[in-house]
Length: 163
Image (cartoon, rainbow, N blue to C red; front, side, top):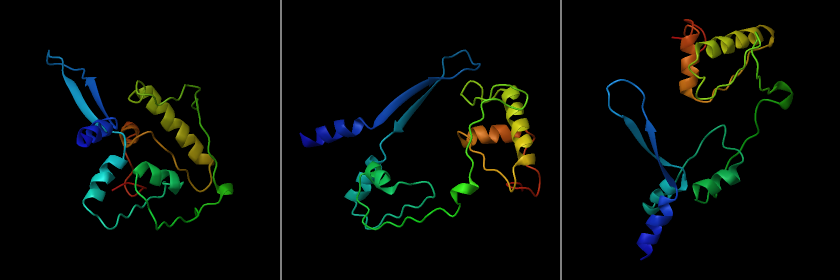
């Protein structure tokens, strides 16, 4: 019936991923992940519970109309403010080679490579000496960022992010 069709339609928004784990122990260890790739599936359940208000806040949800479509619910009241930083204050650049000419690529196979981490750190330190008023650096994930910071000796006490 219609319940079965709804279940089949919802199943399309999920993926099962099986990842082999390397390591000792002799057995073939695996990680089973069940990923929801369709955020609207979670909000459908909230709508069914007659939730009256959903407040969504972020500095990176622009443009709001496409974000609302992804969530699958109407958002009749929206507030979107202009950014406080003007475009002349921003310079975006992808750097493919470090200060010593080594390739900078944060793909999965190189993220934990000490040579990559050192080259990235040296390149950022070199740029920080010439960029006025600081830099904002984006990492592919918190795990990569934390691995790099640890590889560079961790945050200094009293500095940004330090304790």
